[in-house]
Amino acid sequence: MPASTRKSLRVAVLADSDTRWKWGSLTANRILPTETSNADIRESDIRLDGYLLRGRATPTARQLEEVGVRADSLREVTAVEFLRAMERERYDVLVLALVGGAVQAVLHGLAHLWDGRAERPVVVTGYVGVVYEKLADGLLLRHGADLVLANSRQDADRFRDVYEGVGADASSVTEVALPFLGGAAYRKNDPYTVVFAAQPSVPESRKDRTYLLDRLIAHARLHPDREVLLKLRSKPGEHTTHIEELPYQKLAQKTDLPANFRLVYGHMGEVLDRTDLLVTISSTAALESLHRRIPTVVLSDLGVRESLGNHHFVGSGCLASWDQLDAGHQPAPDPAWVSRQGVAADGSYETAFDEARTRIAELLAGPGLPPLTPYYTPVTAPGYLPGILARHHLAPDGSPLPGAPTADKEPSPVRQIVRRAARGAYRHGVQRVAPVIRRMGEL
Image (cartoon, rainbow, N blue to C red; front, top):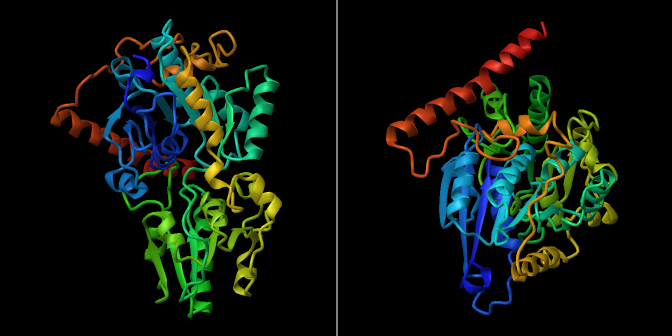
């Protein structure tokens, strides 16, 4: 059914973690055209259906609630179940908010499903934040979507260079900004509040995480007139995009905490409303903070290293140590660096998504869309692609493998219990058993 004959835009977001659901759902709301060739379509007349890819990081109800985006429907699926849904349903726009390998698998599955069909959704993908590692690998796994979103001018230039460098079509690269920026500009708070934005996997070692916690607590003791908050990503038992083997909550249990030190959860934007100094290793919270002109520090205590991700902030003017912060250092971000990162602290944020909106409107208004053509094929990557597809129960041509789950209805209560138990066992193995085995291997 052509999009121009319907009175509303239908959008599907497929996500595999809390962070990617946040990026995907907010991006969907940012990039949808507010005006199209159909005068009956309005920004408020949009149906958003959410699909959560089943796995270790499937978000909980609390994590979904924290994002603040309301989906008209929400269900948990495997990749094959999602493809079955795309066979039944008709959408205008599909946002793939997934890790690179899953994006590639779904793209091949959709290409097989829509073979010979011109009437299909516009397919959009991208990254949830700063791209500081596996640039070529992640980008080529996302190639094949109609739009590959870059969150900054710097990323857009790098993305095009990678695609053109391997002879792939780079026309899909579209510059936008991080969809979750916003909030009121910085104003001083009383009391002065320091927030450390924790990350699940950076740093990894107990020694480094204990060091950061100890320095944060020491800062609270050194400045009793300040409120010092440790902003945590997840509560015990919840899981995020990255595995957290040593939650700060557990490390803090063994410490006598000062009265002005607290652990907090919740929406990052609400925490930033009361922040006077944002401190992190390399979290995208730093970009949210810079957007609102909040003083922001990226810690150099553990070195400026690619493995930490803080190397991305070289030239930002935000790198500093706890010793400097204890002594009263105030960071001053470099305006040119901030401008190239899509932070849009200059007030241009509202127009950052115009190019994406225009491209999607043009694609929706056209007579039909060409086939999805990812760069990776059984010819270009015969030793890599089949394994990626097989992990999602897909054959090298994108078709479902024999025995792949194909449920078209909600699982029975017993099946749901079994699934939850299996997922819990898997997560326990990933987060508890595997680290022990790794540590034993280091002896």
